[in-house]
Amino acid sequence: DGGITQSPKYLFRKEGQNVTLSCEQNLNHDAMYWYRQDPGQGLRLIYYSQIVNDFQKGDIAEGYSVSREKKESFPLTVTSAQKNPTAFYLCASRDRISYEQYFGPGTRLTVT
Amino acid sequence: GQQLNQSPQSMFIQEGEDVSMNCTSSSIFNTWLWYKQDPGEGPVLLIALYKAGELTSNGRLTAQFGITRKDSFLNISASIPSDVGIYFCAGLNNAGNMLTFGGGTRLMVKP
Image 1 (spheres, rainbow over the protein chains, first blue to last red):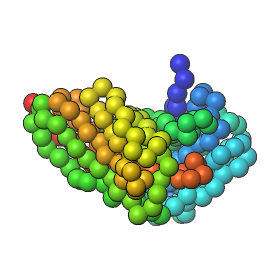
Image 2: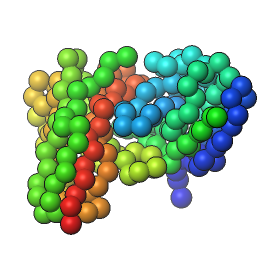
Image 3: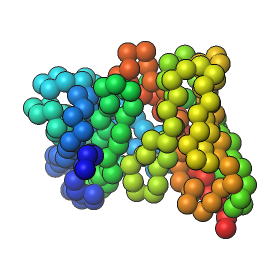
Image 4: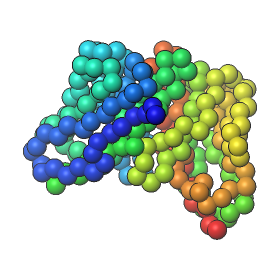
């Protein structure tokens, strides 16, 4: 049963702590993406990776970091430098033939 | 980054009514995608459009790729309560590696 998993669904952290969000896919997709969604808003691109060991900044990369050591996995670290980290984070991967992006269920991060 | 203009921002309709929403852009896109997002979940792909002028249906949903390649439309016929959610349009860039999203249309359906 192919798909994208994100864990955990809800995450709570204290201000000043780094936190890593997990994203795994078994769709054999090369490209993966991280988006941020704020209440009542659209999706904004944080980082994307088109291939293992390579990644590119999106529109709002400041305060975030990523790694892509395996094709299946694209973890996102929200660092203490991110000024407004509370948001809904969505991971996606892209079909290499159709270029369609498919999303995981999301992780809601709350930082207090 | 660039944003697509999606309208309306929200709609509150009666069950059984038809719904129309659209997206416009100042740039050309080669592919348009329409997604639906339920509260607290990730967006689900509804329809993908690949050619200017293309009209594609998925059940009660019909989407069109505008002839200018700068706009797209989504229609939902005979709405039902489970149509409630946020609908997003997205345009794919020429390289095929990045999507630009509209701000979303929040649909509410009164039974």
